Image (cartoon, rainbow, N blue to C red; front, side):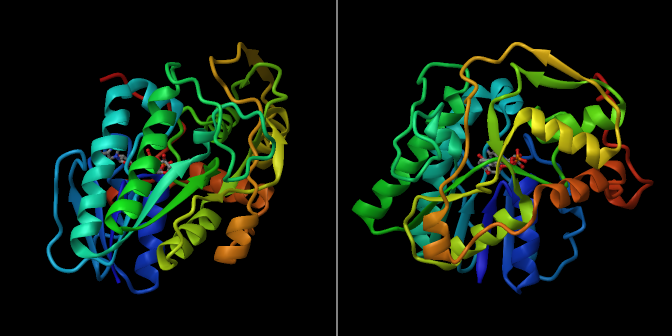
Length: 326
Ligand SMILES: NC(=O)c1ccc[n+]([C@@H]2O[C@H](COP(=O)([O-])OP(=O)(O)OC[C@H]3O[C@@H](n4cnc5c(N)ncnc54)[C@H](O)[C@@H]3O)[C@@H](O)[C@H]2O)c1
C-alpha cells in the first residue's frame, strides 16, 4: 500500500512509518517538524519506499500517484507543546484535518485520525468507554488540544456520513517509548530525565491521580490494524493497567537505579484525575491488546534515553542534558 503519515517525524509517527515500511508499504512522511525531530526518521532516509516531505498540513497539499491510506497524526501533543502553540494546535486539528480528509477523499483512500483520550476531559465515568461523551472545559488551557481533537472527530465523521469517506477514529491514551523528547513535559519522559539527572521527580498534587501507560510498539500495532480495517470507530487504544503517578515514579526510579527524591508541586488547571481505557472494542473488532508490561517498556525507554541513536551518524548524543538557550 502507499500510505501518507502526517506527523511522521514525531514520536509515534516515526514508529508508525518504520512499522509500515517493515511490512512493505510505501510511506510518505509529511511533517513541519514543529514538535518532531528530523533525527526520528533519519535512519529511514535510504529505506526503499520511504519519502519524507517537510510540509505544513494546514496548507492544501497533494501526493503524486495513488494513495491508499492517510494516517493523520500531525498535531502538537504534549501539554508543553500545545501550551506554546495554542493557535497552531487548533489550526492543525481543524484546517489540517480537513486538508488530510480531502486528500483521502480525492484518492479514495482510507483515513485514520489519531484522536486522544483528552476528548474525555476530566471524566465522570471510570474507566472510559468510547460511548462516553466527555467532560471538557471549552475555554481552559488544555481546550486548544481537547477541542481541536473533538472538532477533528466531528469533521471526520461528517466526511464519512455525508461524503462517504472511509474514515476511522482512534482515541490514543498515554503512550511512551524511545524518541520521546526529554523536555516534552510528559510524565514518563520527565520522570526518566529527572531520575537520570539525579534531580527530584516532580509530582503534581499528591500523586494519587492515575494514568494508563501504553508502550509505543503496542500502540503502533493498533494503528496499523485500524488502517487495515474499515471500522469507523472511535476505538480506544491504550493500556488498561492503571497506575497512580506516585507508582509510576517508583517504577521509573527502579528502572533507572536512581535514588532521586520526589518533590510535590501544585496540580495544573484541568489536570484529569483518572484515566484508563475500556478496550473491549479494540479487542473484539481489531483483535488488539497491549502486550508490553510497564517495567519492560520503561527498561527499553530508559535504555534509549541513556544512549539514544546518534543524530546523522555522529557521536552518541546525551538527550538528558539541559536544552541550550538560543
Ligand atoms: N503520545 C501520546 O501519548 C498520544 C496520546 C494521545 C494522542 N496522541 C496523538 O498522536 C499523534 C502523535 O503524537 P506524538 O506523541 O507522536 O507527538 P509529536 O509531537 O512527537 O508528533 C506530532 C508531529 O506532528 C508534527 N506536526 C505538528 N503540526 C504539524 C503541521 N501543521 N503540519 C505537519 N506536521 C505537523 C510535529 O512536527 C510532530 O512531528 C498526535 O496527533 C497526538 O495528538 C498521542
